[in-house]
Structures are given as structure tokens and as C-alpha cells.
Image 1 (tube, rainbow, N blue to C red):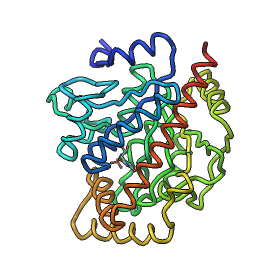
Image 2 (tube, helix red, strand yellow):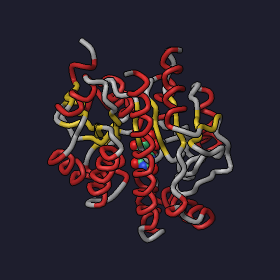
Image 3 (cartoon, protein in one colour):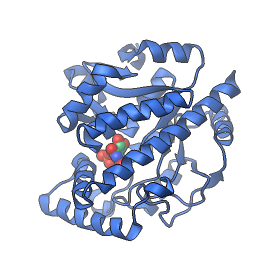
Amino acid sequence: MSGKAYLSVSNEVKAALAANKPVVALESTIVTHGMPYPQNLEMARNVEAVIRKAGAVPATIAIMDGRLCVGVSGDELERLAQTGGKAAKASRRDMAALLASGEIAGTTVATTMQIAALAGIKVFATGGIGGVHRGAEETFDISADLEELGKTPVTVVCAGAKSILDIAKTLEVLETNGVPVLGYQTEDFPAFWARKSGQKVDHRVESADDIARIIAIQADLGMGGILVANPIPESAELDPAGIEARIVEAIADAGKQGISRKDTTPYLLKRIFELTEGKSLAANIALVENNAQVAAEIAVALAARQA
Ligand code: PSU
């Protein structure tokens, strides 16, 4: 028996994969723990629409009712969004226990990659990846996303990493894990709400077609994941100095409240939302839609190469 026995793939996604049509995976921790209801549901639906318009099929992934669900939509997506922070946050180490309990769970980048690979989906859009937290030399808090990227052959399109993380250390660990970091029309690794982090990417790429070519070669080499860093649109960018001050404040609050481990990222996101009076959320939604667009273009280019 393989992990595939636990998959429940929607008819639409199944048909698209069988016909070698472009499919884009989407994570669901961003729905359950990354944004409040009902903006999370609205965002998830808009992102699906962006992907369809670009000619690909969206496949939102979550763990529900003891199944690895691929292509969650309609009422099920609403159930997931309404459950919100009461849902579990599924990282790789949680999968077996969650399948056993039947609990509802949003999947992180790491787990979504794992399930996408099981289902045969090669491209995945998210907001930001997890990484090395500031102060990791004390806490050892390093997201499982970085390890999964090293081994699972899925291309993840993100807006870089939030500067709630230590971005330089995050890039170091990606390098250790052998993950190519491609800057989409940029040489700067973006910092989620800001277009630049001050760190460089490994390679700048100009088009979805160039990325599809690299994905095909990476697959021939039998290597793991690829990270595509796509900066937030200029019109949606937040003032870098302003957001940095809010992040420092949020991290200090997390320390005072004794927040740690898997609760850190959701807490910081919520606190920054409060401190920016919702501006961080509007920017977050804009960058996820932008990533969905680029991911769909990559999936279309990849399907055309394989036709
Ligand atoms: N960054 C965001 N929004 C999110 C996350 C990261 O801007 O919702 C989520 C992603 O699902 C990511 C996870 O995989 O947080 C990382 O959590 P941790 O640091 O506990 O691995």
C-alpha cells in the first residue's frame, strides 16, 4: 500500500491530470491559520478564479475526514474556512495522526507539497514559505518547508519569506538542502510585503517558459523542489520600514505571551494584521493572487512542453 490509498482527488482535478492539462496546487494553512473568516474564503475563491482564467485547474489541498483531499471547493472549502484557527495545522509529522483521528486540518507548504507530489501535481502557489525564525540559534525553530523543498519534486511559487523570519539564514538552509531559488523577473529575494529583502536569489528568470524548462531538467536529474520568488506587485507593497517596526513589535509581544513552535507564525500574522489595521491582509491577498497567476502560467508552459 502507498500513501496514494489515502488520496481523495476531485473529479475535475483527476480528469485534468489524466489529460495532462495544467493543474496548480494551493495550500490551506493560509485559509485556516493565515487569514480571518470571511476574507480567507473570499481569497481562496478569488485565487481559484485567477488560476482558471489563466487556463489551469486549481487544486486546493487539505486533510479532512481522514483523507488527503485534493481539489477542495464549494461547501467543503467553506467548511474549512469557517473552521479557521480551530482546525489543526498539518505539518509532515502530523499526517498519520490526523488521518487516524479524522480531524480537519489546513496543510502547510511542506504537507501540501507532499500531497501534491502523491497526486502528480508539479506546480503549487502560496503566499510565503516558512523558514528559519529569528533567534533560531536558541529555539531551533526552522520550518519543515525547507526540508520538504529539498526532497519533493514540486515547484513552489511564493512572494519570498516574511521578515518575521531570518531571511539570510532561510536562504542558507535552502542552499544546504540543494533548493534552486529562482527570482521571477528580479535578482532580489522578496520579503513578502516588500519587494526586496536585501538578499539575492540564485538565478533570475524572465518567463514562465524559462521556469518550465528548468523544472523539466530538474526532473530529468531526479532532484527535489524548486522555489520561485515572485515579488508583491508594486501597487500593493507596504512601506518596508513601517512593516519592519510592526514585525519587531509583534515578535516582542509573542515573547511576552510565551508563544512558541507551530503557534508562532499564526500569532505573528494575526498581531501584524492588528498593528497595521488590516493593511497587511490586503497586501497578503494581492500577493497570493499574483503568485497564483504566475503559477498557472508555469503550469500551462509545462503542460505545453509535455504535450
Ligand atoms: N507564511 C504566510 N502565511 C502562512 C504561512 C506562512 O505568509 O499562512 C503558513 C504556510 O502554510 C507555511 C507555514 O507552510 O505557515 C509555516 O509554518 P511553520 O513556520 O510552523 O512551519
